[in-house]
Length: 82
Image 1 (cartoon, rainbow, N blue to C red):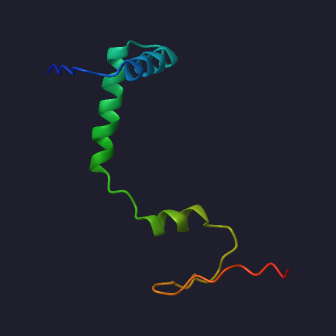
Image 2: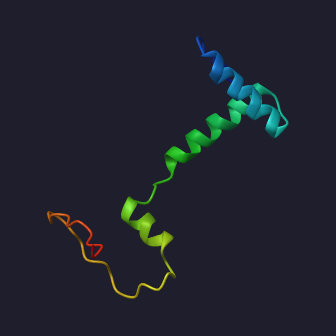
């Protein structure tokens, strides 16, 4: 296995890593390995675009028609009837 040395880590970052490791019940070194594994594996996945993520969040909320796109339209202030 390869070794990586990271120098000049801020004290608050080190303390945070130590706290996370304690929560997970493993060493600080293992915590760093877990963080790096997740970061590298997340790079390979294509993350859905924002519109798709918003649509997925509201699936089943009762919308049956697509929402109109508002490209280039001026935003109108809300009228509260006062």
